[in-house]
Each structure stands twice: as structure tokens, then as C-alpha cells.
Image (cartoon, rainbow, N blue to C red):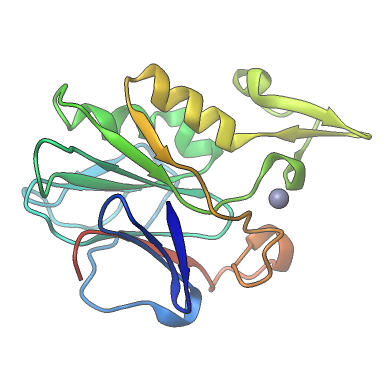
Length: 196
Ligand SMILES: [Zn+2]
């Protein structure tokens, strides 16, 4: 479903491209990301801050990630209606997936999940938030969070068909930016939905 290219990954099912850090294109609407559940309808509001963008007009929308998951949604029966979401554990907990799906007004929605950090590479503290228990597991001495499993489960419970899973783990694939691996905040993937 994802095809590897020099600049990143493209999705064969819809116009989605995950760009590597040195290949970010111009002309993509993005936000100042704040780990929130705010999804901006860019046909009606300025694209300022938040963690999701939505359009019915086919505009190219982008989110930046480096371990958090980029999630792209589209309406197969309404060409040009799509959304891009930045989903870390905070945004997940605050309801970014629910907020994004709600903008599709009950129409069928498909999803693709881009590269993020897998559960094996994501240890969390013993006091990590309780709501995440269903998606945590113990590996050697550490608790781990399987955020990808959480996102898939939540999307499926919202009636969304997940048609593409991440092609790689950001922590393990050294071509990809990983905040947990390098501590660098400046380098990120740019996941774009829409023609650019
Ligand atoms: Zn991993």
C-alpha cells in the first residue's frame, strides 16, 4: 500500500505522501502543532494552530511528526474531502481522532496511518496515565505503550476503515526522524494529503 521513494513514501490508495526531512515541498497548509484535539476546517478558518486540518475542496494539508503518528482520513464518496491529523498520546487522549472523524458528518471514511514509533520502542513510566492500560504491555523491566494499536482500535470503533498501516517505525528506521532516538526537535516527516 505504501511505496518507498527517494523523497519518502506514497500511498497507492489516495493522494498521500510522507516526505523525509530534506524533501518538504512548498504550498502545503500546516499548523503550529500543540498536542491538542483542535481540527481546523481550512475552508472556513485560518490555518493557525491545532493538530488537524480538514477540507472539502481538495486542498493539500500537512502534519509534521517525529514519533507521533500522522493519520490521514478521506471520504471515498466525496472527492476532495480529506483531513490530516497529528496524533501523539496527548492528542489521542484529548480526542483528536473523534474530532477529525466528526467533520465527515457520518459519511464513510477511510484512513491511512503513516510512520510513528512502535510499542517495542516506546517505554513509558510506571505512573503513565490509566486510560492507556488497554494498550500497554510489559517487556523486560519496562512498560510500553502501543500507540498504533490504540489509534487503530479507536478508528475502528468510530467506524473508519483503516486501509494502510505504517511502512516503518521512526525509531528503528534510521532514515526517519525520531525525537526519542535523537532528541532533535527540528527534523520531522511531513505527511501531506491532497495533490501538490
Ligand atoms: Zn520500533
